Length: 273
Image 1 (cartoon, rainbow, N blue to C red):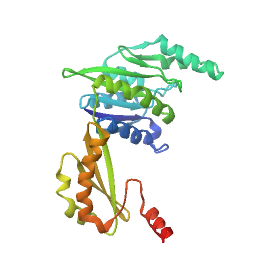
Image 2 (cartoon, helix red, strand yellow):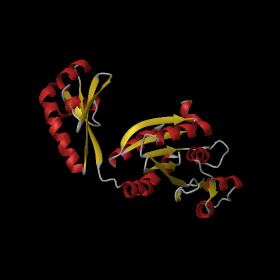
Image 3 (cartoon, rainbow, N blue to C red):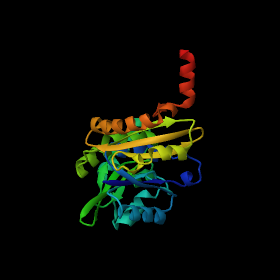
Image 4 (cartoon, rainbow, N blue to C red):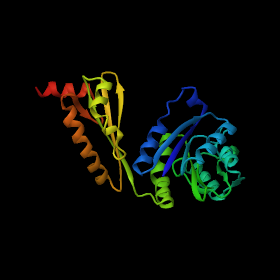
């Protein structure tokens, strides 16, 4: 199963806000066995959002959007999804009631424009948002004899994470029959060039599962090992086998794994001595 992420907001294109949502979503999709095909950022323009969604749904099984579900005029995600899927926006009374309840609980009056947030494309699966005023929804789309999904989430990170963990992941696992997981481990090396590392572990980079890739940073090279399996235990076993080969070949240069940094390892070593 393949997935794409479309993050929406002109502020992202202008660089006023750093897109942390896409990185976090990618981690969640991988953890549930979905291959990330592409990540796209689009401004608050209905036609451009619709074009990005139409292209994405033709390639993958799941498209996750982030942003553009607010009550203001420049929130265009609902309209763009309706345009991309050839549907009409319909008022969902249950979502409207959930929005009103959130305002009541917080001691505020709901504005007329908040009513817009309860409109979703016809035939969508409504997903109330208990931690914010932007309801979510999933749109089943028939493509090539199979059902794909456009799933729309708020842009507020706290709301997005809550909805992804508590509503969207369970929905995807049920609807798509997801059983696999994709896990990664990073081996960090220093004191050697990327080209030399490639010469030493190049044959491992040709493998399909686990896959091995390199990434160069200032003063260090990362060797990423990624495995797909039916469980975290099985994925870890696949990664362990390749890691042993990497360590056997590059032992003098390895200083850490995953979140360890060269500065941190040096500091820890000095303190221990």
